[in-house]
Length: 562
Image (cartoon, rainbow, N blue to C red; front, side):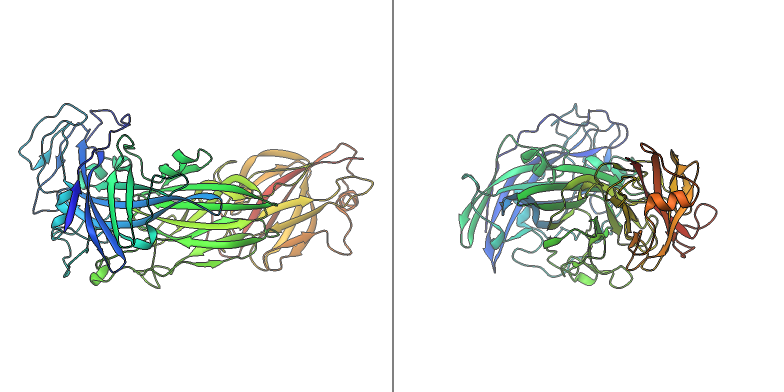
């Protein structure tokens, strides 16, 4: 049994104008209505109606009985304040409805009618929420390549009953909306179509709308809240709409699809910050396998958490759901790393696949800074990872130390597209996010206590800390970048311990004394540049002639006092 509530959202200003080049399928009205189903075994379910619209200049194929038609998937998100911080999480997803006959309605543009085998230019179609009463023709997500829009047809059709294939959510993840401080819920609908994808129009295929939730125990109903339709924006933006302090960044993977990352740092007081990340895979077929957040190695990390969304109804190869095992967490020097099994180990591992959003979170005593995180890709290919701008814990060196020459792309591209994290050098073969050069102490010629620490290197890397007299634009330097020149002196040569090098060490001369001994006495007010480079013997990581068998940190500038 289900009940249908047909209350349409009113779209905000459309983002893509009518007549966009090529076929361009967008979700013009999401959702058109909600069908409610009785819960069973701790699972609640709903089905959404929606109006896809072709705002392009070419028809969209819509042929039933063939793979030449769009598919539509839906998700449910919860926006809730937990322990003083606002977070958004995907709490449910559906299987995919297959388009079968295109109506010729005019939701946003002037419609050119067709015979139903194509969605005409300017035309919209309607899929009712009540269509959830029969899910036999729905297909699993795993057979669809969201990058290309190509999918297997007919889709896998394992035995099903009850709430199978519908948009499922755990009853434990529901609470009534509407009161002060209550959670809010958002429905998202995404379409995938091969002709739309081949035209390069796949980034505007998701829309979302707020949903009212009522009920208790095992009886729940959902209804659309009118006037909140966010056309062509994934639901992850609902977090930013509620909290303008949320940063949302996106990256398109070469020859693959698009990721979006929302991040926020919240001051908890007492010198502690909460870091929250929501990684949304909109259309990457290669998916995400790891999530690397740079953290200064001397920082403390606690309260680490992870959240994903369940696959159901046999959504995976062989009609077996993808593995739902939570991601593991490692905290090597200079990072917090979340990961699932590699593709080689388990092709059905719990990767962040298209149309899903996973959360990563922790507390740290290091304040926030805008830099980058590294997302490792699941399926083999090039690149192996991508960097996405985000809020991360980063303690900048105190004055008079000035950090620059970062390998995150802000200074210039790394030699092999091996970008590192904010404040760090270029990525290395150990995947640490690059090495971080940090300086502290008294930069006074009469009381010199300057100390340099390089972290994020290979475990026992031979390291050279150099001093120079001139700052230059970055040039390729092994697997990294060099931004110093002029009179260059090798101050210290040490081997890392656990990927960390500290200089000067016990028995070593101070920085200024070592500089003078090497023939470069530093005058009061003198400016010197510092950078470290270190051994990375993996010649296959960034091979000649572009790279080499060493890498470098970012650089520091010091203005020396008397």
